Length: 72
Image (cartoon, rainbow, N blue to C red; front, side, top):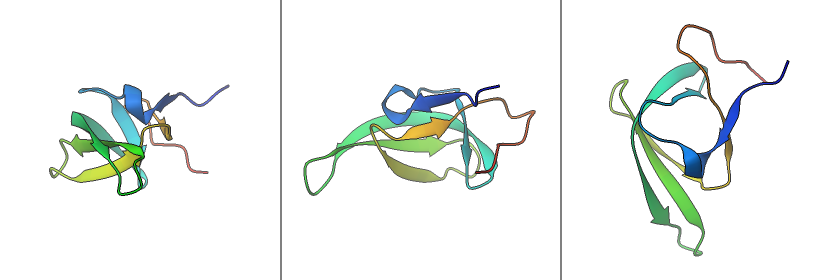
């Protein structure tokens, strides 16, 4: 069985990501350029309005809020 993942650059509203041991529902995404010129994706989630930045190529755990996120 493989763990479902998605590259941060491909996240969109409604996706569910495993983040810090909890499922977060992606509300919005936007791109940003880092201080050294790297491409980042700024993700805002519905739960508490939290936001974080991920490198565009980061691979994130995706799934459904009914199942707990897998831990590494």
